[in-house]
Length: 281
Image (cartoon, rainbow, N blue to C red; front, side, top):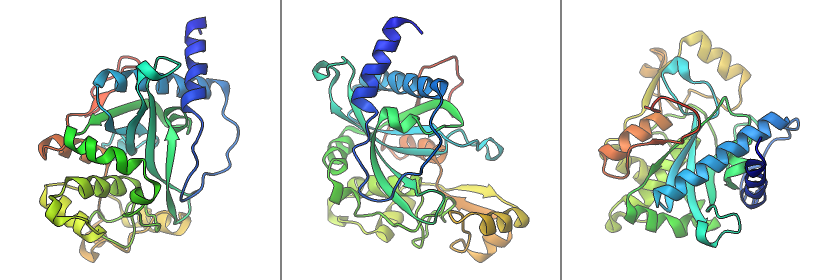
């Protein structure tokens, strides 16, 4: 790599890649990342920081392609809230310092927790593809979310520790990562007269605003195999008729990105400019 890029990546690693610690959940022990994985992850973090700085937003929904969901017609597997902690003009690196608050599954278990990470660590997770996209939120929602995301206690209020990757979109027994993000969004977007929302009220508000779950078609044998072998996958919260038909309705990043502008809550998703890529939607 060119010297200037190496220098930029190292500065980015120092400012963005150090975890601030989790207040719920825990990360897994993994084999050390290879030099190419570190390079690609930090390059994507740098490009993301620059794109977020250029957007003039202070809070966005940020997505990554952690898993290959192409067989379901999906581009993105996971998202969280990215917020601006230090503007570029005040940062020693000349690049804005962004933090990501998101929910993660704890080591393939049936538990999930919330984490605050730098962009570097957010992308140093061996993703399926080194691609990312973000959706700027409406300005009043950004203003309401910024202090909430910086408050460890406030941001956990709608957190459900029972984790299920394919949790029923309108169910309360489990909660997956994308579900948590939409419920937090609902907690600041709903009219003041309806707040504070509990999970049931947040889901009802989201449903009233037209959020549509993605229906995954999963055959019976596939469901049985996943349920037996994976602690973080369950189907018992889905309506019986839908379950028997293999129609699993869950919240996906692609569905959220389609819904945000339709509901007037945010803008269309923006693909982070890395290499020549097609539109994320």
